[in-house]
Image 1: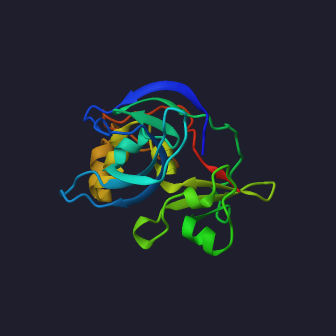
Image 2 (image 1 turned 180 degrees about the vertical axis):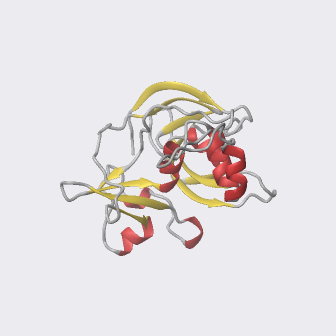
Image 3 (image 1 turned 90 degrees about the horizontal axis):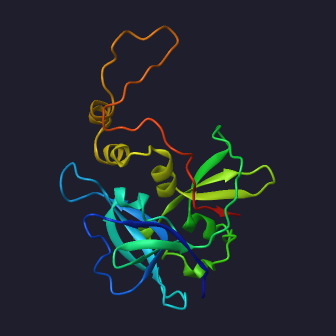
Length: 220
């Protein structure tokens, strides 16, 4: 299978993640999250890749583990060579209206879709996605669209793009219990809250603003 690539902003990791890989790799999908063996450390995640040669032909799916906070740069479709990414698969970009109201969305797995006979509507065949065994399941948010179709977004992708521009927010939410999360993300208010309001004061390491998130999803 051959894909088209386009240039993008250059990314790399300070800790040298993917630097020693012998092949050029494209991020294909996100797998399950697993607890870090070190107490109160960022969870790890399986990331599925496919090798891509100099003619942009894709090889078989392979997986690597990395810390969850790295996924912010490991966008689906991004191409990595010697720990650096400066290109990605040339996906079409579209905007979809979705509802977060009860009944407008649900959590499903690729395995659920397959068992229900609902093949993914994509230019990539189902057989090229990740293995669907019990250990390596991944889950998606399925949104209902006005035209009767559905939008599928990996839960990991949603978490990475929506929960804050700062990697600190994602690190804290994924690592600690809620009481510790509140201590690390919020500071005490300078004055009592006014009736009917819910003021929030963030710690210094939390960014309050960011651009609207862009997702890599599947229309079905």
